[in-house]
Length: 60
Length: 186
Image (cartoon, rainbow over all chains, first blue to last red; front, side, top):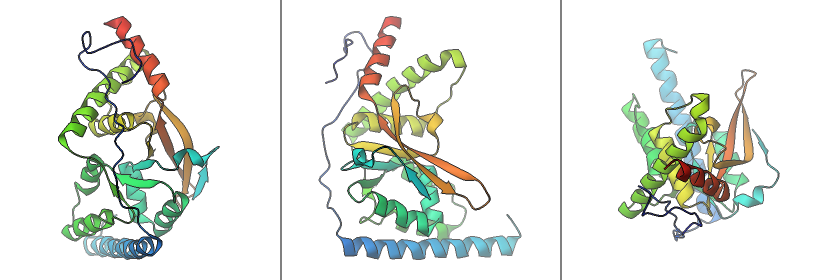
């Protein structure tokens, strides 16, 4: 708990902290590279969709 | 893209939350995506559920929604945030306290109207202050009375302008001071 003078008795709220650290799996190098390549393709695909939309509807 | 900080090692082992504006930049630029992943190899890039909501809402084209969903679902790159009931209660409580501190600290300046998602994000940073950080382009939504800037990311927009993103961490000792100041008003 934080070292502050106020408590739940005289406050509507008291600060909440957590020491929880989620135990996520850390990705290895190859899987990161694979994800980055896929994400780059998604970015390119999104650019293409936006470009087509702007050309089709003459918008900016 | 240019990074500046006195010492990036403070971010090692931390969950670096990406505010929606920075996530949007990553989604638009392959170089930014690659740079940010390589810059913080010992940190965990994290998308908060509230930022995920902001990122996915108001997309006009259905095909873009599918792309965006797949983009942020890359588990090798983005770590999920805790999103269960007990966590949300803490985030809500902290966000409300931070809003009160903001209001108190900014009363004389007439500043108000902080966004709900920004306050909830601030609440999460406060809850996990020892192991979290935030990248945001909206520094003024995370006031210096409780948040420290530990680094900057400058992105050249290609039209002679540079957009600055701040890397922030929650300052617990300063928060405690401001929280005590609130108690005087009670």
